[in-house]
Length: 126
Image (tube, rainbow, N blue to C red; front, top):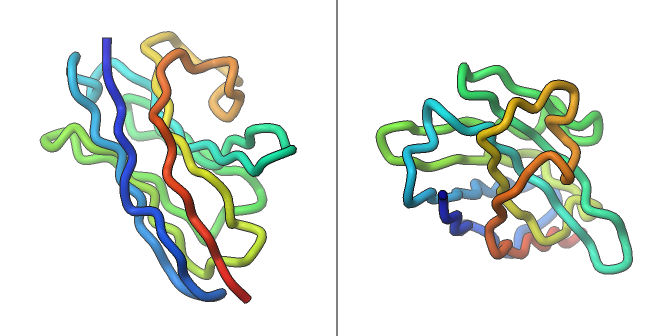
């Protein structure tokens, strides 16, 4: 079992940058877990933003590709999301998620993941 805690959210102006972090505790996630970042705005469905496999393979939603970068530091048991060129439409609550099960084509689907953090708010002003 793994426990996830996000940090790094905040308020930034359009065009700015933020880096989110997700600290994992419990079982070592580096070799076993598929990890991802999702976001959800009230009244909307949760959206997969980026994912990373145990072997480092990444995937991105079209809306963030080229602006966001997902990475992990296995030694620190921490997942990151570097967000650059932020837009007001990126404003949301961001969640990290994990699963030890093979994702197949479901890397950016929330039903794939069975462990979630509590979320961190990102607000981008125009």
